[in-house]
Amino acid sequence: RKEVEQDPGPFNVPEGATVAFNCTYSNSASQSFFWYRQDCRKEPKLLMSVYSSGNEDGRFTAQLNRASQYISLLIRDSKLSDSATYLCVLYSGGGADGLTFGKGTHLIIQP
Amino acid sequence: AAGVIQSPRHLIKEKRETATLKCYPIPRHDTVYWYQQGPGQDPQFLISFYEKMQSDKGSIPDRFSAQQFSDYHSELNMSSLELGDSALYFCASSLRGSGTGELFFGEGSRLTVL
Image 1 (cartoon, chains in turn orange, yellow):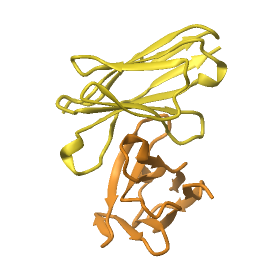
Image 2 (cartoon, each protein chain N blue to C red; image 1 turned 45 degrees about the vertical axis):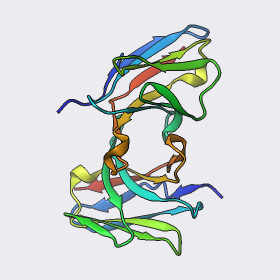
Image 3 (cartoon, rainbow over the protein chains, first blue to last red; image 1 turned 45 degrees about the horizontal axis):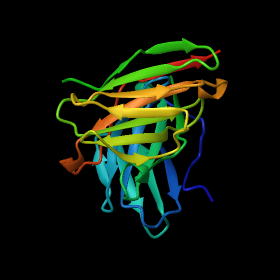
Image 4 (cartoon, chains in turn red, purple; image 1 turned 180 degrees about the vertical axis):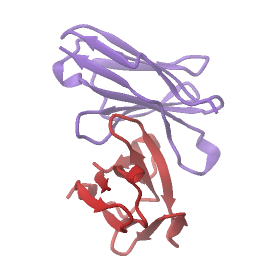
């Protein structure tokens, strides 16, 4: 089983719709969780950290389920500018080598 | 605000040549990371430096080496280039004590090996 798994998509979603996708992880020792956004041929940028209590930033909501070992990202009222690849990133300690990137979920918002 | 600066942005080399990529981290950031991202792949960790000392090593080939200098800029040296080295190379920096775990990425250097 891969350490971090994401549905690569693409998810084709009409503008204004709500979309959600998950990321499952196998290392129960994972300490910190993040969602990064990466536009085509651009660098990854932190979208939000994910906390056990869940956190919300505007139209974006992130959840962590440690029991089932997954994190989720919900985007409400999707905009065309939300089209990107969303990378799930886990930190399991032990320095930089403990940071693991998922392969990303490709989201396309259609007008 | 200043971001992570990488150069060159694009580089074309032939097999068996050498290449050097440069990275200037955000001022006062104490940790620098190098990542390699192939087409359609997630970023793969190569190597990192903390306060100018090598900190962690990932899947960096023996043909590659890196160092961080006194002014905190870092260079990734790649020798005996192979076609499979064609990728986007990202440098990222962070402040270890920030508590956020956030990495700030540069725009990347795209290496094409012919």
